Image 1: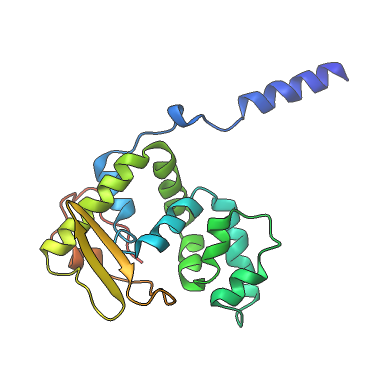
Image 2: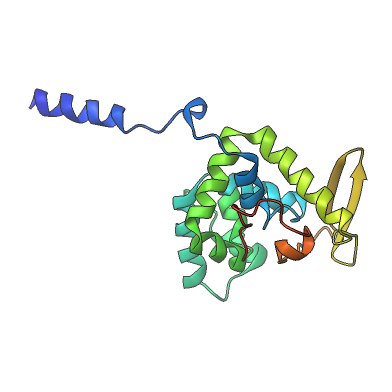
Length: 190
């Protein structure tokens, strides 16, 4: 029995989660590819997506809950899942069932996004700004009735125009960013 317990403990240690410093490092091409579909999201939503992506199993559970409860959306959905043992970022995404469904449908992308955010947070944030700069240079990132786009030095801030309404933009990365600069790494597209 002791041998079995020792073997199970050794296996648990061997299979323990990888430490942040041992995680895969993503190239700039991989970061651009992965971040392309979400870099133009309002900052408040983008921060929730980045954090939630670090919990892919909870994304699956939340997406299943959302599919099972199609009549509950927005703040009502967020209130309905408060008893769930999910990260608050995942709970916040039940307000956006289509976004949650896309993250669930492309779980490999979601996992990569979460891994990149955990391992290279500063580079992820820099990449988001670079993608926003490209979209702005293409004339595809402007303020309108749904969002307010402002520049604070080199930082582009995207906020919802109405604080109580969040629009989730869906866009073609090949259009908003112009010619894609990594042919071997086409952007993720929803």
